[in-house]
Image (cartoon, rainbow, N blue to C red; front, side, top):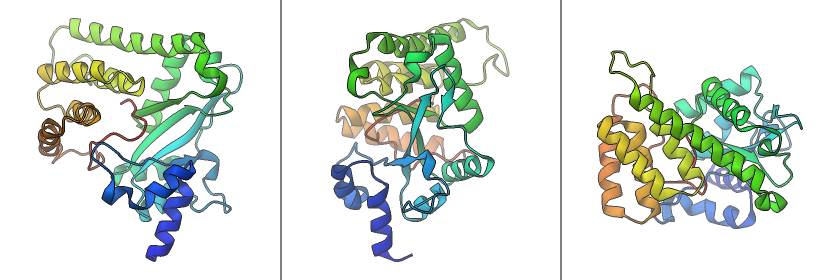
Length: 268
């Protein structure tokens, strides 16, 4: 694939004109703490009228982070948009296995928004089912238009975060056992949800606390590095990223090489 086609491919993947212009050199010239994660519309899978119709093709063009858009409601708290076919699911999992970062974005300009149709417990279940099914741990809530002023929907999102906080408390109260009663530290998910909600300082505290309890946990090192980059603590971020690379050197799951945050951040 020639360089000109690679550049065109990247440009056509991006959601807006400003990002389209910036993306061509983002991987080389962007300041620390910036990573482009262009929208890849779920209906583009297999469609011939798009510049790319698979994440494998996008990755071959050098696009190493994408935001899948959009997860919406059918009007009764049933998820639309991320109900992938077997081939699409395989494409997503292969992209991740080869080092790509995938973010699931909910909402969009037109919705319908899951937060409007789901209770807190229902939305929590939807998110957990997605994580379990697709092994995607990064989430984004794209809130636009009148939805920005919908306090009820915002309360639902916040309540889901509170459920994660409660899960952390429950996990802390478990008796020590090997293997543990719960298979991974819930603070990993809580920290990334706080990041997605713009609460970077709270997320940093959560990741630091997890690292006290689970030293050199790669997921929390990655999250902490994102927080540090977000507040321009470059020296400490570089140190944490070096620790992450060492901790993840022999992992059987591939994470993106950079722990820098994209425009929207998400949850494990």
